[in-house]
Length: 252
Image (cartoon, rainbow, N blue to C red; front, side):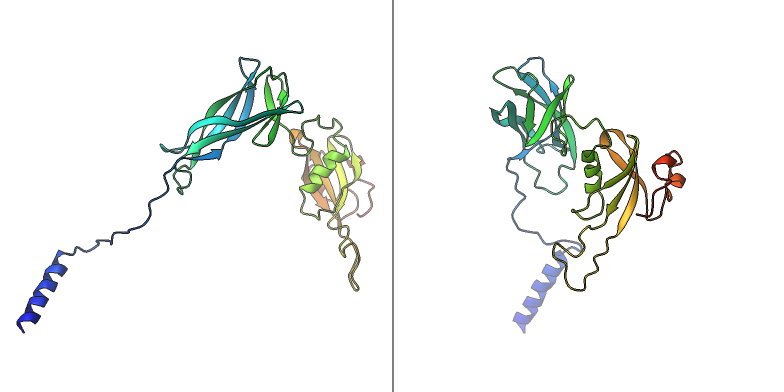
C-alpha cells in the first residue's frame, strides 16, 4: 500500500509540472545550409567599356542573407565565331521552401581574350545577338538571323499556328493578307484517322477560319474565328478588319 501511495504522489508531481500547450520537441535533420552552385538567369546584355567585355544583368535569388553570392562566369569557350559561357551563382538557402521568394538584379562582366566584335554570345545555352549598343535574345523560331520582313511570309503563319490548340500536323492556308490583317483556314487535325485510316473511322476534317491582326514583334494574334462564309463575326469584333479580305470567302 505504501508503494502504491508513493507512485501516485510521483505521478501527481509529474502532471503538475506539465504546462498546457507544451509541444513535444521535434528531433530531426536540420535544413541543408551548404552553399550550392546554380545557373543564373541572364535578363540583359550590353557592351562593356572594354571591347573585349560585355556586362550581363542577372537575376539573383533575394530576400535573405544566404540566398545568393558570387555571381560569375564559369565555363567559357569560343567556337565557330561564337562565344559560349555559363553564368552561375551560389546559394545556401535555395533549397529551403520560401526562403528566397524574389529576385534582385545583379551584374556580371564577361571578358574575352580578344575583341568581341559583334559576335553572337551563347549564355546558359541561350543565344544573344548584337542589337545596337546592346544585345537581344535570338528568336526561338527564327534563330539569330533576320526575321522575315514580309508579315505574310509562311514562316510567320507557321509560328501562330503552332501556338493554336490544334494538331501538330495542322498548317495554315492563307486566304488573304495585306501585312496588317490576315485571314486563313486551319484544320483541327488534318489526319484524324492517322496515316493509315482505321476501319470505321470518320475522316472528315474540322476546319475553322481565323482572322488575325499583326501585333509587332510578337507576330500575328487571333481576333476571331468562324465556320461561316465571308467575314463571319470579325467585323463585329474588329470593325477595322478589311472586308475585301473576307467578304467573298466560302465556308471553310
